[in-house]
Length: 267
Image (cartoon, rainbow, N blue to C red; front, top):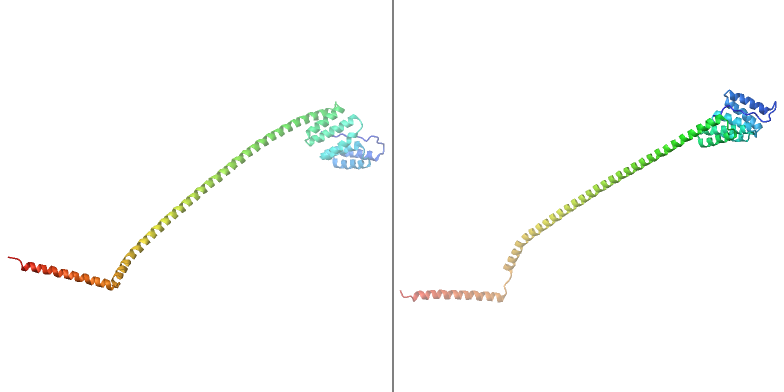
C-alpha cells in the first residue's frame, strides 16, 4: 500500500530549518519511529503551513500510525503538489488510505486518477486490481447478507404469525371452555332453582291440605255447637208441639183400630 514515499521541499536551501526538520523526520520515519517523525513534520508544517510536500509527509506518517482519517485529510492537501508524478503519488496514497477504510469504490476512483497522471505505475495498477476484487467480494457479501436478512425476516415473520395464531387459538379455546362452564353453571343454577320451586310448591300444597284437614272437624264442631245452642222461637216451639200432638193422636188411632178388629172377629 502506501509506503516509504518521501517528498523533499520545493525551493529548500542549505541551512533551511524547515528542510532540516523534514530531513530528520524522514530518518525517524525510515527507522519506524512514526510518532517522532510525525511530531517533527508537524513542527515543520507550523513554519510552512502551505507546503504540500509537508502535508504529504505528515499524511504518510499518520498512515503508518494507523490514523487513516487524518492521513486522508493531509493527502488531499498534498494534491496541490507541482508535477504529475507528485500528484499521482498523492492520489495513490489517497487510494491506499480509502482501501484501508474498506471504501473500495472511492479507492478505485483514486487509483484511476493516479493512473491518468502516471499510467506506467505498476503499484497503482496492482492496488487497483485488488480494490476491484475487494469491491466485488464486498458487494457479494452485502447481497448475501441482504438475502440472509430477508430470509431471517421472513422466518421471523412466519414464526410471529404462527405464535400469534397459537395465541389466538389458545385464547379461543379458553374462551370456549369458559363459555361452556358458564353455560353449565347457569343450567345447574336453573335446575337447582326449578327443584327448589317444585319443592316449595309441594310443601305449600301439603301445608294447605293439612290446614284443610284440621279445619274440617273444627267446622263440624262449630256447626254442631251452633245447632245445639241456637234458641227456638215461640212459633217454632208451637209448631213442634203441634207436630208432637199430631203424632200422638195418630198413634192412638192406630192402637184403637188394632183393638177393635180383635174384638169383632168371628172365630
